Length: 228
Figure 1 (tube, one colour):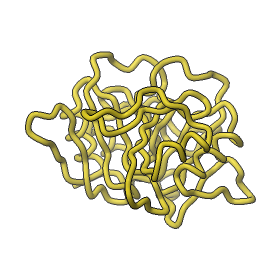
Figure 2 (figure 1 turned 180 degrees about the vertical axis):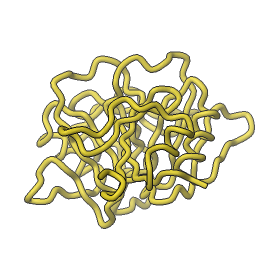
Figure 3 (figure 1 turned 30 degrees about the horizontal axis):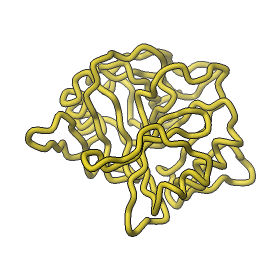
C-alpha cells in the first residue's frame, strides 16, 4: 500500500515571469491573476510552482520533463532551443528552455490540450528507484526486455501518463531544479520506507523536505491535524 500521493511539481528558476510564460504555452497551462508565479490546469495535480532561486543552472538537470508537440518548430517559436535533434534511433528532440533547463520534445500527430507526457529522473539504479517510488506513491512498475529504463504507470493523482527512471553513470551532485511534492497522512511511514528527512516543517515552511534513496528532493505535505 502506498504511503503518499503525488501533489504537484516545482521548478527552480531565475525569472519566474519568463518561465511561467514559456512553460504555460508549452504545456497548455495558465497562470492565475492572483498568483503569477504558478501554473494551473483543470485539476490541482497539474499545478507547477515556479520558485525563484539565486543560483543559476550549473549542471545537467537530473530531473526533466518530456512534452508533446505538433512540431519542434512550435517549441522553437516559444523560445526553446535544440540541444540534440531527433534521429532514426532517438525519436525525440533534446531541447533547452529559456534558462537552459533540458526537456525533450515528442512530435505527435494529435496533441492534447495538456501536453506534459512524462517526468524523467536520472538514476544510478533506475530499477530500484522505480520500485521504491512505486512502493511510496503507488502505480504499476513497468519495464521492457533489453531496455535499461523503468517507468511507473497509473500512479494515483499523477496527471500525466508516465514517471520514468533512466540510467546515468554519475550520482546526484547538486540540488535538483525540478522536484515533486506529495501529500501523506503521516510523515513517519515515508521515512520508514527509506526517505531521508532533510528539513522538517518550521516557522518558515509548512512542509517537510525529504530525499529519496538517491537524494532526489521532494516535499511532504501533511493534513493540518497531523501538523499540530
